[in-house]
Length: 597
Ligand SMILES: Nc1ncnc2c1ncn2[C@@H]1O[C@H](COP(=O)(O)OP(=O)(O)OP(=O)(O)O)[C@@H](O)[C@H]1O
Image 1 (tube, rainbow, N blue to C red):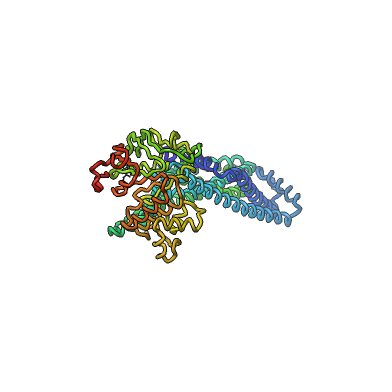
Image 2: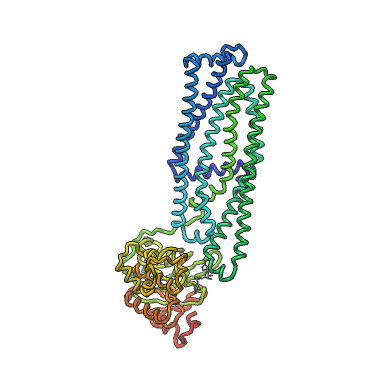
C-alpha cells in the first residue's frame, strides 16, 4: 500500500479508485449503482416524510396547529394545510402507515438487488482472476507464492461485493443526510448550522480514530495469507512432514500463525467496535447541545422538538456512514490485490501466434537462444537442431538446462534472445493452440492432477473414445496396473497422484502423451522409474507407434542414447556437442551415467 493509502481517508480514496476500476468487469453493477442510490433515497424521503407527518399528528393532537410562535409558525401552518389536504387524523394515520410500508418494500427490493449484484460482482471477479491465472505468462504465476494466489482468488474476490454494497450505502447515507439537512434548515437555519459544524468536528475526531484501519486491513490480509501458506504446506507436504517427524513443528507454526490471524482481526474489530459507540455518543451529544442551546437561541419549543426528532432519525444514517466509510478503508488492501491481479500492469501474456502449424517440417532449431530465471542464467547462446521424423537424445548433467529447453519448446517461457525455429518460422509466431496440439510431453516431474487415472489421461484429448484410451493404456504399460485396481481407470489417484507408485505415475503420464498422438513427442526421463523389463517393453511399443515422428528423449541411460539418431549434449547452459551418438560420445561411451553428464 502506498503512504497515502495508509491513512483512513487515503485508504478510502484508494478503495474507491480500485472499486471503480474493478466495476469494469461487472458493467451491470456499475449501471445499477444510480438505481440503488435512487431507491435508497426514496426510502429515506419516505422515512423523513413519515416522521414529519407523525409530528403533524402530534401538533394536531395537542391542538398546536395555530401556534403563533416565531419559528414554528410556518411549520404549524404547513402542518395544518397538510392535515386539511389529507382530510383528517384517520387519513393522516393511513398516510403515515403507507409511507412506512413503502419504505419497507423499497428496502426489501433494494436489499435483493444489492445482494444479487454483489454476488454477481464476486462471481465475475473470481472468474476474471481464475482466467487471468490461466492466461497470463507462466513466469508471472511462478513468481507469486501459491498462498497469495489462493488468497486473492478465494478470499479477496469476495471483498469486492461487500465494498460495492458499502459504497452504495455510503452514497445513500450522504443523500439521506442532505434530505434531513434540508428539512432541518427549513425549521431553523441557525440550529442546523450549529448541528453541522458539530457533526464536522465529530467526523474529524472519528477520522483520527479510524486512521490505522487500512493498515490493520493489510495486516489481517497478510496474516490470513500466511496461514493459508501453512495450510497448503500441511496438505501438500504431508508426506515429507510425516516422513521427517515434523508434525509438532508444523502444528506449532500453524497454531502461532492462527493466533496472529486472530489477533490482527481482533485489533481491527476492536477499532470497528470503538467507532460505533463513539459515533453514537458524538451525535447524541450534538442533540443534547441543541436541546440545551435552543432556549438561548430563542427557538420555539415545538420546532426544537421537531429538530430533535429529525436529528435522532438522522443519527443512524451518520453512524452507518461512519461504519461504511471504515469498511471501505479496511477493504482497500483486498481491492488493490484483486485489481493488480486482474489488471495488465507488470504482466506479459503468451503470444497467441498467427501462423498455421505446417503439416510437415524438416527440423526444430535453437538459434543462439539465451534464457534465464530472474538473475540466474540457464541457457547461454545455445544452438542445436532436432531433426524431424527422427529420435534425438538431449543429455547433460543435472542443472545443465534440459528441462528449460523443454519449457521453451512448450512455450511456457520465451527466449530472452535468439529464436526457436520450425524450419524458417519462429515457433512463437505459430498459433499456440496448433503448436501445442502437435506436441506432447511425458516427464519425470509428471504433472498429475487430483482425480482419477482417467481424468488425468483425458487431459490430452477430452473427446477420446474407449478404443483410443485402451490403446494408450496398453502402450504405456498402464493396462496391467488398471486391471488390479478396484475401480480401474476411475480409481482416485490422490493429490499429485500420490496414491500411485513412481512407476505407475510415470505410466499415467505416458498414457496421457500417447493419447495426444502428437507429431512431436518429448520424453523427459519418462520411463526412469519403470523396471528394466517393463521399460524395454514400453520403449519398443513407443518406437513402433512413433516411428517416423519427431521424438526428443531426455535421459541419463546410455542404452537409450546408443539407439537414437541424433544427440545434443549440453553442459552448464551451453552446447557441448551435437551429432550422431558415436560422434558425440566416441569410444568413451562406456555406459556410465557420468559419461552422459
Ligand atoms: N523455476 C526456476 N527458477 C529459478 N531457477 C531455475 C528454475 N528452474 C530451473 N532453474 C535453474 O536453471 C538451471 C537449469 O535447470 P533445468 O531444470 O533446466 O536443468 P536440468 O538439466 O533439467 O536438470 P535435471 O537433470 O536435474 O532435471 C539450474 O541452475 C536450475 O537451478
